[in-house]
Length: 371
Length: 164
Image 1 (cartoon, one colour):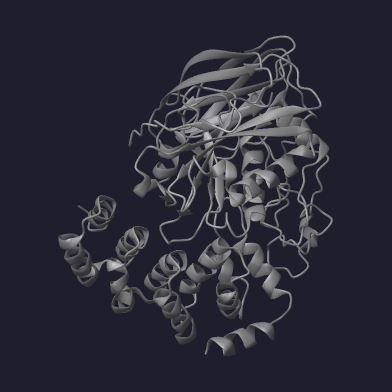
Image 2 (image 1 turned 45 degrees about the horizontal axis):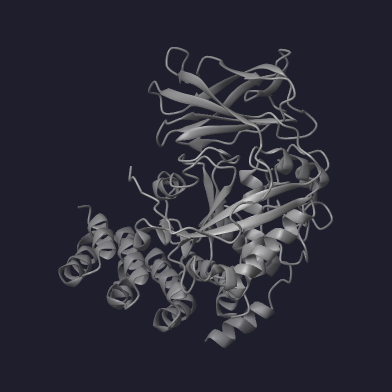
């Protein structure tokens, strides 16, 4: 694993968000081990105090194997999530390399409860794994408004760096679209700008393959080095697979390890090649990825298999809408049924303004870094 | 040839282009060869039209160029050769990958000049694309470039492609 040092020449547009810090408690949850129980860890206990709003849990490092939450039980003993169950209306856990992040709650329909949650994690690969687990608990309530601080880091973007970003029309256009998208749910944005101080020639184009996301992970491990209540956004020239196909943007997670720096899920990457010519498009991608980082999933997934998010007020496009039978939920087929939401699975250029639902907004504002 | 292809694209099933655009705009992960091929006939002509359309976002044009590698034909090779000869480094990088995907060793004479491109990222991407081709001929190109390359990041990419 490549260790990068982020010695950025930071230049804050606003020194900080100006919003008061959230009351966060960092908890060491100890180690969790797979092996004797097959591929599952023993239960990991997460104690939540009265009045808490949200908790981010992270367990890793297990390298390039894939892991996910297998079970998650509420303090009252009921199941919040069971990886072996057919239906889990209030929680999701996709598979992750390196570490498993989880955010509770993922929907206002199942708010955080005081008491002890118990989680188990599944890690593939077959070999016993010992992980270090931790949690960040947001103890203060969320209001109807919040501020999100974005720390932009420029990684070899042509014609743009921290010294020019505040006056750059393209960058400010990106920021305007992010502000527009988040403002619909009461979130305002402040931004800081820094230049990447690592190996820019290598990381300007982030190269990944199906079984090796190490460049992406290494970049994110340089994010948020001070565990601050902010979201690091790496702006890169390109982000591509080993076949050269561009990944428009990607967030650690989802959800990301909010307020925890130095992990492979500590930030997000956005391709900036359209920044000058179409900043609204880049901004839309950034809002989508920020939504993932903060705990949102696609309202409806691409494949026509009935997979939706766990937010009950987002439109769901049913598999029956696949009128042409190609197995994909196309934007046109799902017009009025979710394709206008910013968390739709693809960029829908026909949607003049992609926005969040009210309950998605609640999830965003409850995150430990929304203050 | 390209105007003919674009004309064909306009004559396509009107439902097809929105489907292709959805794949070109897919968030978080790119569409695969299987995804594009599953849409049936006519996808390649739409990809050429999108790739040529300067009003489209660069990332989507680049995705269209790269995806042409999944549809190897004389027409798509002609389009890719034009992007390779152009002055847009992003589209040039994607054309290199597409040619290596679609034509394998037969693409080597076409992509060899990109190993000496003035843009560092074009050289890095070409080194990586040649790793997909593999074999003695690709290794010979990479080895020859390694002897004269001065940029550390390019040398690192070449050495990785050579398995060093």
